[in-house]
Image (tube, rainbow, N blue to C red; front, side):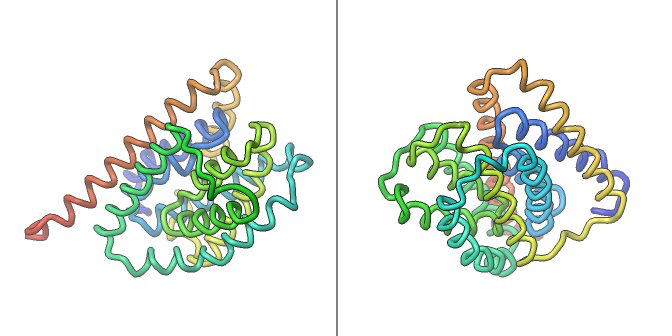
Length: 249
């Protein structure tokens, strides 16, 4: 599918939209795009595409925000993620596609609901909290492309402001996505898909910049969470459908 011309418009639209919402609200590519990429090209390649996009988006963002990175705070998050990324990659390879889709859909839906409610967890504070969040994020990033929510929950519980969160999230996102691609390999896409993906990612970031200047952050995040929840539920539903007795027949 990844090499067919019919695949390209849908693929480009997903990448464009994911990049745009990421630029508007500071989060969102993995939440919004990963479920639909998974449905389009399968769990392994779909998550790997989200990881590659995460490297590009975070790397570009760091060009303007690197001075705000708190390296001392990042060490436990990054170190814990580095340990669990290979485990997440192994689980993604080992689980059958229907089980993986069901688990990813349920996990995404649960994480989005936690972010919407703004859950406060004492376990996600201090160094122990950073290690816990980093370990969970690394596993979820390599297995499902969903490393952001765990780090977002840690930032909320640590009392980080939006100004503090953005550069550190970009620094963390760059490294954890590099770890994830190193553990799983580059997705099997043809040259036309890579070219289109790069072009639509850049166009999405530009469009998001223009729209973001006119869109309140709270409203943008609500829309992103609604879309992410919808994607999670659709992925969960497809997994259950494939697991249903007699589906193969």
